[in-house]
Amino acid sequence: MPLQRRILILVSAVVLLAAIGALAVVRASSRAEEKNQARAGGPPVTRGEVSLTPGEGGRRIVFRNMAWGPHRDELATAAAAAPEGPRTASGVSCLRFHSAGGTGICLRADKGGVQDAYKAVVLDANLKEVTGRPLSGIPTRARVSPGGHLVAWTVFVGGDSYAGTNFSTRTSLLDLRTGKFDASLEDFAIQKDGKGYRNADVNFWGVTFAADERTFYATLATGGQTYLVRGDLAARTVTTLRENLECPSLSPDGTRLVFKKRVPGLSPDAPWRLYVLDLASMAQTPLAEERSVDDQVVWTDDDTVVYSLPGDFGADLYSLPADGGGAAARLMTSALAPAFLG
Image: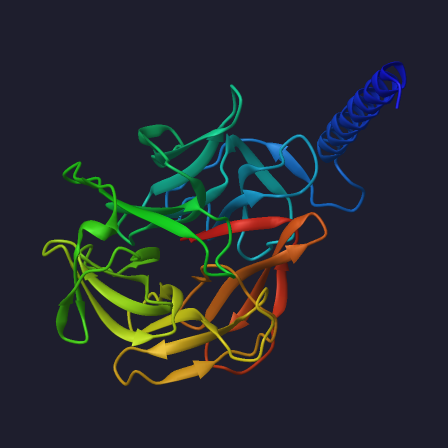
């Protein structure tokens, strides 16, 4: 092939690739702009004051607002008795969020440079930053202890999904009473099957705290298996309790854990079903939700749990009885990461 023709083909290819890239940028920009426009029939969202103080203004839900419009991704609040009613947006944006005892934890993206940086920010009851820590990966889980004194978060440092096995996580704990920061639960001593255990493949995620502000539960993964562990913050130990449990969430009365469990025969991309574990008897009960839930469930009270599933505009929240009966019901559209206050 003559040199002139080869050059022409090369130039044409470069121009075509540039055009495709420009079109992708335009489409992405158009999509982003579309998300900034409120959609017809969506929940009304207005800017206002949002508090994390329990009981202030009656029982409320604080959550990440996913409704399209100028307040998308902001923390917002709605009355727990009317979850699909008007929303008040705070102006504070979080990718993951949780709150209890007047304290909030916000895992956010700080945009700038070539790629986003991530940060864990502890918020006071007025959503003001108390302290912050840079994150070493993509935010995925966040929890505050019932009394608001302990916070925990998990990030992906390799991979971006729990569905497969090719991922690595890092889970950190911060004690707001003392300022003590544990950068990774992997530094805690592990008791597995009654013996000390160490392995380079250990991962932790999905912390949930007990009311004593010392005990916690979490998921430990090692050797291709997941385990429920009970942790002791003062002793810096974790002890395995049971296999095949992920993302536990402790009931308000401290007697049960709701969790997701891998069920053989389901799709590798959607392998989970929700169960409740009675901590006294270690008996587990399947819940009535038949869809695969990749979330760390929250309790609204001792009888009901709430979780997210993909929706038309990001995610919707569903409620479900915690006794294995009843049926799932959509609680809120276009919402994620709820905390029930009051």
